[in-house]
Image (cartoon, rainbow, N blue to C red; front, side, top):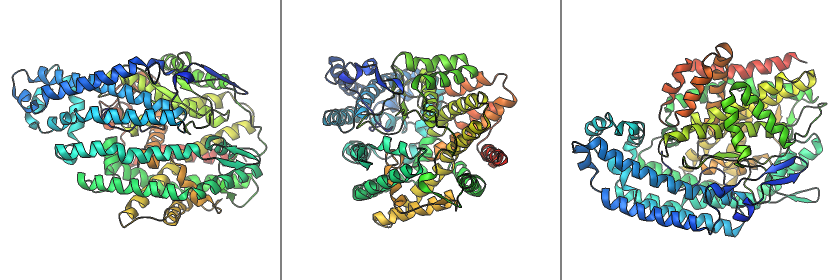
Length: 619
């Protein structure tokens, strides 16, 4: 809802003032940009950063002094719409400033999570944010204690009607709201509770080194080897991953146990009946909708992943693929290294074909140095787009290594970035989009880029490789993420019975992997540890189904676009610009789509199935 929640949840990457001085890193991929964080603050010890900390602290105390214990009275006055509007506007301004502070600290830390200076800076920022926001904690609690009739009446009139979607949003939290002192305790303990375990995970992952052919590699380069054309190298990379993961199982098991128990305690106090209900509430999606998605995907495993991997095994001339070959490039297909400039033009060109405005917004990320692309020791793995706050702009982090999937990742994160720019116009309280819809723009950006690249490819073997790569990406986005969700459910449910051993967690992991990947993937020794490095399990429990939701939604959306493109761009931009102001039912209605309809998921899954059928016919 607001940015006052303590953690910086997305994978963190940060740059100090020294880092931001270099706009690009030269490599064989071309000039790779590093982001410029000066738009937030000019440095860790800058006067602007310290001034904002002091200003936010003073504003929060003044706000509490003026409004705490008085909101119910304001709601009863004749000028309630204006009085409550002014209070919420002041709250939003403070929220934006606090969001800027923690975003900067989080981004700095993400650039080098093993640097003790940055780690301390991030930890101190979290501490400051906890202290300051404690003075603001009363506000949403008191708003939710106002009589429903009074609040609804006030919110139906200007200027308070501007915040009506936000008021309705926090109202959904009301059944799970505790008394003020307990909420304060939960809030203050977060800094030494789950946030600290999140940070331990990040720093552990970033500090791991994997021995491969005489080199000591960090996690991003070693994972990249799993997509090499050399099968023997892929095997050695897999074994190196497994060796290091196994050597660190104790700490990953402790982190997982602690966070699962911490969540269980919170859920129990707040009255959530299912382990994933708090995520569904945060996503503003009904449990029944998610259950329908999960059931549809699980039922489709044989038609999707099982069928595709059997086909891929045939291409490799084997009965079953070893797990290190699951994402291997197709045999006899040249693997081109894609330079950064080519990747940039590919994505911008695809965006521009759809909408010149979409390309213009994406172009800003390159022109204004909002992207951090190089792989660096200690840099957080993976990729993300962080929207920061409406008074600033988003930032994108990727670990670019020139693979076709890296181009898709760039398209994905820029989709998020464009979405965040558009949604930011709603202000700090209503810009954030529920995760289920937050993945829509990113996956749509991938689809646009893929279709553009495929249309320009005339060589039959290259087209087959591209189509196979897209199918694998979609399987990874839909099948694999639902399997991840199933694994999380098993872990959290079993944790209710007592602490889990490393063997317990590994066994649960293997169960869901066997089920989802099928008999054409041979899961060899060592693979049982591969759950350890998935950051979503740690930072955002049950987040993962949002990817499958977004992929199936985009498949359906793209079908609407192909059949009736007139007016689609305007409707699409209106959906992205809504941010968190509308429910998914309202946002999808202009496209004739309804996620509550079981047939909705079959449309999206059918797109993947048809691609697999097409691939089978190319042999």
